[in-house]
Length: 354
Image: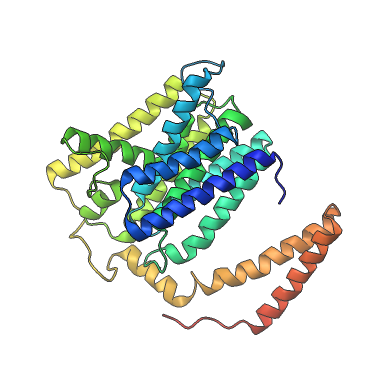
């Protein structure tokens, strides 16, 4: 509604539509990976040739753009890799959504700092979809994203990070994208490397992902997801801090983190370390019990709803009355929203405890 550069916006939306169609088809029919790649290939072609999304600045190539015969194939390779990395990493409730929320928030912050409102709008739209989804996708999940949702997240975030480093602020280190995408990329490198070393297809399914390893050492669902969130937050923060460092430094940092993660799990497997016997069924760890009690009390359901219902209309009303820069139609919409919120709050009743 507010974005400029119509070809890029339209290309992005059409490509997402292609991902949606193939994703739903895959969730219903369990497509062969070659057919999944076809859908992703078509979506990438749309954003590359119609939207102009292209990786022109590569690590260790300096400030000059690479030739088109190099940039376009590398763009295909990068977007295919990111799309499938997020798809492969989606193994626990709230995992893919939460990690990509952190990544998209970092891209949004850097887009704001670079003065790119279009990229910021893209990021906020994706973040809004993730937040609304996570409300019902956290463990125990009521809804699941499937390949449709995970491929959308991977493809969308891949395009956003390309726009950030190639269009909004080319001064950023191109290698920084590895850190800002974070743990899903590390997980994909480790898992596919292990499959190839054992003589299997890199696309064959197994239970060697990071979240599988965390569950195998006795952590429950909440603990595994929390650890991955913390690790992703650390990687995203490091991407922001070192965004202007040399490619050599950033690549060395990323390689060190990857080897460190691999070494930790290898050591734990070698010594047979486990936090506890693997929990099954009802959460019985301190964190699981704590979150379960929060759910029962309404702190994680009713209270956030009331907070949003009160704070958002008040903030918008403040913006209308204090800035004077909002158009009349927008101001009328805000006053209507404020009135509806007051009516809703007067009729609101807490949900029954479950």
